[in-house]
Length: 637
Image (cartoon, rainbow, N blue to C red; front, side, top):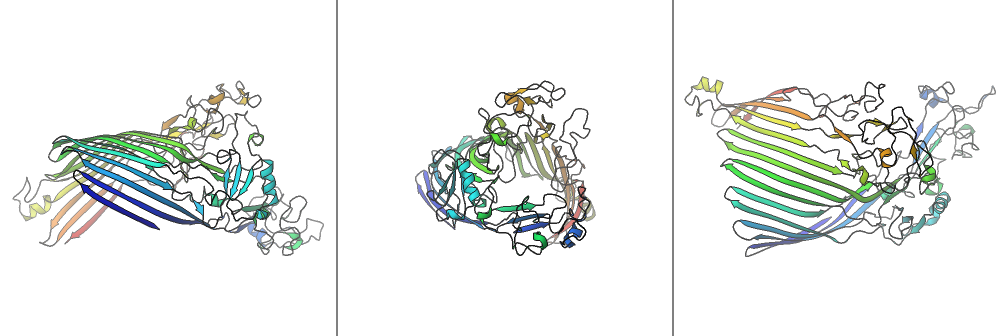
């Protein structure tokens, strides 16, 4: 639901505008982990023990658990793995309010000023029926770890395992007291704007402006989403302990819902026939050990950008103009996933991290905070010729640089993850680098030219019908695209000889394995042959290093021919050539997606032992991107 109203008052040299906007946004999410459940039949009970080839699942599916008559294992059969989830719809809502005031002031015939102020309020996302919870590991409202649930929820519906785990990790459970949004929205979002236009001369104009713009996600999608949190959404999984013990038949070693269930299969085995009759899909049945929690910063700071430009435009001829502009966008308080159960010190290679996380009883989960930032600075130029004498064209060139330490909430980030977000002196700032969409140089040229041949043209203006049909009415068009490559960060093997996303300051040199006790780590000399002894920030890869993937180069060309059929009808013949030079535009090493598969190990760097390192296996804008030619006839009337 949306309601807006605007007012305009012209008073002398001033044009005043003001208005307001009210929105109530509703959006729902329904995405259970397994659409209620999943039964797996992997062939473990019908294949050779400890040598499961994975191709006898159908035989296992058809096998009915039966007591052995020859002294073997009883009741072999049924499923060897079961997943289940409740189905809970998250019905989210959000309120938005805005006011603005603007004055367009024509100071004189050469100078115009634009002055404005806007106020925005983005209410917190809340679940309409109170079905969300917020995990607050630190900071407001109390400075202590808290798990918040809206009022109206009965604490007795929580599993004893969950409440015990909260107490063990010193997390306070709070039901009610913080509204449905379970946080605090920012209310002082005042955004000033300023712009000007000045006519230096009849052919020369200067324009510029700077403004502050608040914005916030309308919705969070499936994740991050506090409605996808325990105790409102939960998943279960059970699996057999070995290749010969059916799921459900050994309750002492592997407790599960089929133990003692009257509707279980023969011998208490989990079968497809028993379905979910033995599974209690309630939050009270959840074992909280390792449970992942989701959270959003309690004191939510509204993300904003400061955008500005300074533009000079000059008229070279009556039909030709040139323009150059400096453009900048600085974004702050970007929402990004930093996690809350992170190690807070550098550990030796191979050290188990569970004893060094602040909440060892819970899994990683997710935690979103408005701590990210980005910056864009660019020089944008343009030259444009309007259509005269059969010719028109538009050429643009941009040189820019984009840096960021924030990830894309729904599609990952340009870093692959943060290295040491909670280690003192590191944070997310050490992972600031070129954004994945950064392209340093971009040149585009497009245009068309109507050839000056044929009747009424500069050449062959008095040609006859046959000559005009052959040589008149032709035009050519072209589009040229030249772009630099996008940054690729990482591509090296870490000290454990595993692929790592970390940037390495010494190209592809390898840091040595860290040793010693936590907090006093030192590199072990030559722990990887030829390694570089680095510790501290250097051991984590130092500053991000990148190289540029292949650029994008393309020429599209077309030619048109017009035939005058009669006063009412005109025919156009079109010959169009896409990527006429048949030039391939390659992806970066390791790229997979959009219907292509990455070259195996193309991002693994092991000196002298990986011949496929750096290989590229696909092109950018199509699986193969070949030259394409098409012909067409169009009738105009």
